[in-house]
Figure 1 (cartoon, chains in turn orange, blue):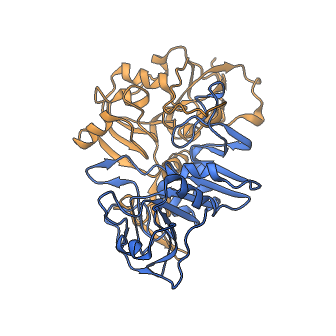
Figure 2 (spheres, chains in turn green, purple; figure 1 turned 90 degrees about the horizontal axis):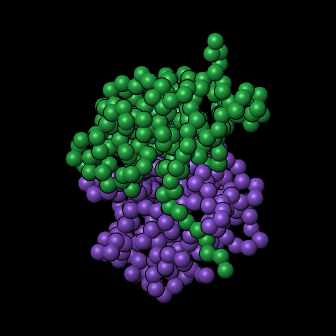
Figure 3 (cartoon, chains in turn cyan, purple; figure 1 turned 180 degrees about the vertical axis):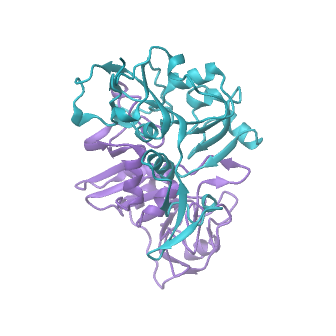
Length: 234
Length: 218
């Protein structure tokens, strides 16, 4: 009897069922708090035609960027895609479809999907290219546009600690999109630095309850830093 | 003399008030943090989930899990809080941030701003900029007054894809501090030693010039 135990032993098991042309929602901001090993597993599986929903698409060598050389991504939904030459090349040549989405709208699209809300009105993007083809409604004298939520066939998430039931704790700014991503997957897979027994995490401190989590795996992480910036000390 | 990047940041810092929650964009806006007046408490919001951003870390303090919106390693100030991206943008979109400072390519007399895309050339994405300009009431745009080729960035109508419509009321350039209202630019201050004629020459949109335009003070 597995009960609420979400732990799987291998990355192969963690990403089992991922097929071509699926939509994958990924947590992370830049290379901070990215599910780096789950992304590597997608690369190893060679799954193609993917729609990826994530704030960024990694760099040429790290994060979601490693799915670009074999053209595993068909469509990218993101708010910022700079700092990645191969991404830019595929976007400009039309090999990769890109839907630029304001960062707050992107977070809300995931949050809404996870909360069963199919769409929402927001002022963000009114009068800009983002509003093209979308319903505009005036509410209390201001214009808003209708944004639809995004559900993923899979959501891939990086957390700091978990108990075996999949209750999650994130660390510092590595939290970012991960909690919303966790709610928005039909299958939510989480990789963490440490797994403890149920009861060992303080229920007051849990950021994401285990109800959103389907599979859990412990990994080891490189945690690349994009802009290593220090202050001078004398 | 046109203002340096440091002077732009210094002039913006004069707009800070004690107890302000502030979001600073990447580039010149980031430098504003260096000029927060003493005896004033200001808390910096970083859109990736941190309120109370501190200074850059020492080598020993570097933490890959603690970065700012520019993906630089940072520290946390005393009294900081951490949260997810939806919460962060609830603060921004809900109008809870007191002052937002960001850069731009173009601003026009209707308060439109273009800052995220040059079709065919620069397509990196808007990040949080569209949310910031739509959600904030108090926004200062910092940019150079004209391009390197002398083309004005203050226009009758923006030519590039917009980041936001009718949302900008204050622009600080290296030549002037300008308010936007009633579909016109209004010249509030000029950079030390810069003439009104020079500013008008490099401004494409209609500009209202009062009888006396003070020089900025530092």
